[in-house]
Image (cartoon, rainbow, N blue to C red; front, side, top):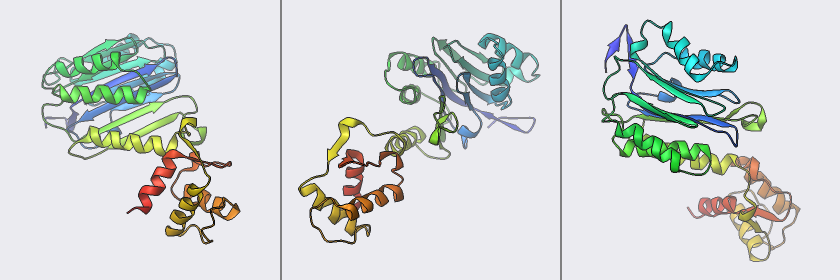
Length: 295
């Protein structure tokens, strides 16, 4: 890997984007670089999202977000960040604000292929890529994909990899998504912050982590509720007993001791968001209980 003044190039491809309807902002990134999620993505709810890479200047993240919060345009922020940087020709950065305005910068000395593509609500950028096809695939996939922002970002990342990706290979990936009060318990804006630091197929591993995130942190879909009655009561009692949570007899009655055992199971397995106070169980939790006791 090329070094400059003792620093390493964070050679990667990324997408920074926003969803004006939900207020979500985020960055998804992959690279042949250890723990890329610790260096590239920055975002603040109601403000913007920034990806800084190549000869990575991590000050671009907090400084850029502060400038956006002051009311500067994405173009003005890029100009301010790069004009005072004597190594700007080795930098690469993409910025999107909370209104969907986006822009990117690629220094002239970034390793080929290097460049970016912006559109409404997103900007894609990459360096040391196989070809321009990577950023084009990311952009086109993001534009046509529907659903929540996190899944759209990773779909774009997958498309970029399939189109060629980083010419040196792959090692790490990450996703950061913020929204107002989106963090655990509503105490901050960090809705999703998942990182794969060292893995042969980092995007696939990132998707696996996102699936776990959905399982543990998303609220129950009302369509997934299953009524606890009849034979299902006995099944739950038997399975909870097998795991040591239920100490009573298998009666088929959804009584207080069964409910307490089921609640304890929820808490131990980190299903806090899916605990029910009625006679229903989240179908995802039920499937998890079945899988765990079938081993």
